[in-house]
Length: 200
Image (tube, rainbow, N blue to C red; front, side):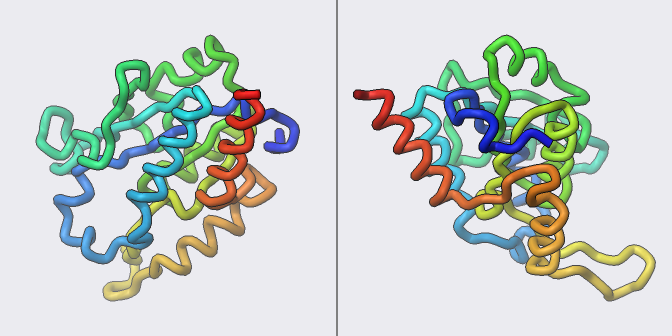
């Protein structure tokens, strides 16, 4: 694994994964984790912009009604307003690499480190992190800039895994194995320090 301590933050890009209206169209939206998701992602976007580092947004499509390409849910949530230089990429795989041109774009930009944010924590965000680590990227998994929902057990009716358990398992599985699990506050502070150095 390539650790974030091995790759300078100047070579980082921010990934905002599947922060789209599709999720709001499901009843489970009311049981979401992390009510600070929107302000935390916004803070990271602002910090990456201030540091002049790349930002990518992803929209997930699949056969579920809310995720069908061309339907109303396939749009970024209203709190997001990409600039013309910030690419919005459609994907139809859980990870952000396999069905997109992301890796080629990152290579072109000289990006070797990624900050992962978005929905769902243990699905598209975690899967992207694992693939990124295997491809040789250092990853900052910003745990409080991700969101998830309770997961039902398909084999045991009425049983589910709650959001706290999902966060705990995701943190244990990823931290120092596939990523540095960090917080918005920590990464924003590091980006602000970087911006101050750049301005000198």
